[in-house]
Amino acid sequence: MTAIIDYQNVYEGEEEIANAIPSADNLTLWANAVLSAEGLREQEVTIRFTDEAESQQLNSDYRQKDKPTNVLSFPFEAPPGVEMNLLGDLIICAPVISREANEQEKAVEHHYAHMTIHGILHLLGYDHITDEDAQVMESKEIAILSALGIANPYEI
Image (spheres, helix red, strand yellow):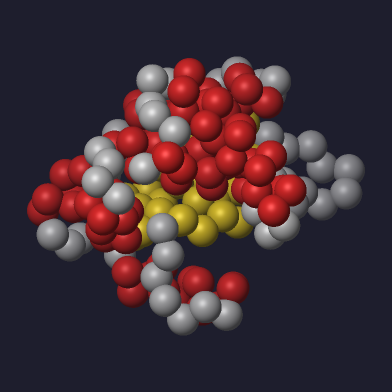
């Protein structure tokens, strides 16, 4: 498995938040953990770190929720007959991730890992709309995070 990360960091806010944004190497490690768990080979993901204004605008435009959110997932759908290893795009809101990590009393890096894994699972078609779907998705997240030495984020 090899994750190809198109790394986009457009966040220009508080220095403490900016400094906590993960490196492309960490994103690759986390993405590879998902690909390995799912038995997938080379896949490409665009991961964009942004501010609350962009997150809120995209969340409003695409989900009709007028507030910033931690991660948005936009799966890529290739036209029929076109084979591509592009999973899609993740938009990660740096201030929301930092705030949530603080509120949940967890390491911001661990929250970034969780939200990256969560977002990639969405790109792969997993969801948490029903309780049953949520249980499947959360168990995958917990297992992948555990393999990375990160505690269950749902027990905090």
